[in-house]
Length: 231
Image (spheres, one colour):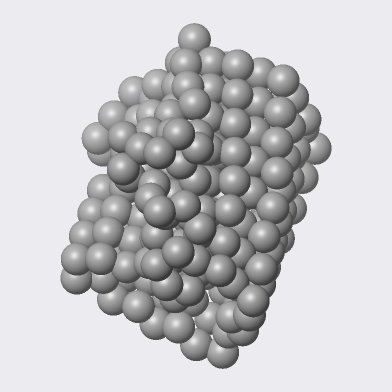
């Protein structure tokens, strides 16, 4: 199956809301719980409120995959979700994601040729994360592939990422990584006891490459460890 529970291929405007829902122990090829895609020119919007994703698994994205879609995630929990090919929780292409007051804990992203991360946005996507906790997640290479860890949040190819009032604690594989024309803004956030100690990992907190713009303001960075550099 493409999506373990919900598979959406929108050919017209679609709005979906899920409230007080538990997705647990689901499995799929593409996305463990929800796969959402809309055709060009169509509007696909999802609202998740008080939703929990627990121990879901997929080959590519442990919980959600979005393409040409919009999603608002509010007061949700992502716990112990896994992916075999690199995106532990959420993958997005040409999409807009807003995450508020949510917790990501004990999730794992395993080895992949595209890099290892919990949340991956790609190709002109926009990601806003506010008042959210990342606690004890694993996003690193465990068998020594050359891509290494890309952290809890990975953005690539003309994306805009804003992270406000967030807490990153004990991330294995780093926190944030950006590649190729990404604008990253981090404000009033805390990064503590994170690590990127594999020789294939990037920095423990923020890693930027290829014309990335970084704004880092009013944040605390403390007791992080990395093989290459802390920030």
